[in-house]
Image (tube, rainbow, N blue to C red):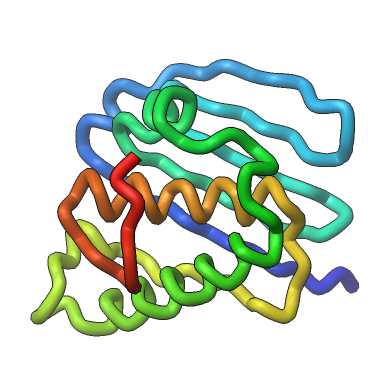
Length: 145
């Protein structure tokens, strides 16, 4: 029986759901990426994880504003993601204090699992995009890129 570790990051916006269109991109390794206009999905069968990011404008922001891959080390991304995800999950648990439309679902991110560079890169960049777009501050300095 396989143990499944899922990272599920779904941020739904009404506009994103109505404007998504399918586009497939093939990859040379076990990781498949299937962006839907404003949807990014990463799945890796060998690690048994899945990341889904749905947010209107993130795909464009990632292509135009984010630092390129390998700009940050994987360890830097993991440390930042652990801080951001911990605060995110705290806010999910406090819907009376934080907007439940922004913090809809808990993120299952285990710092003891090596998710690889791509997953950490996308989660980190989504957190930067989210903080700048929705005027939120999850932890420490937020680059304005």
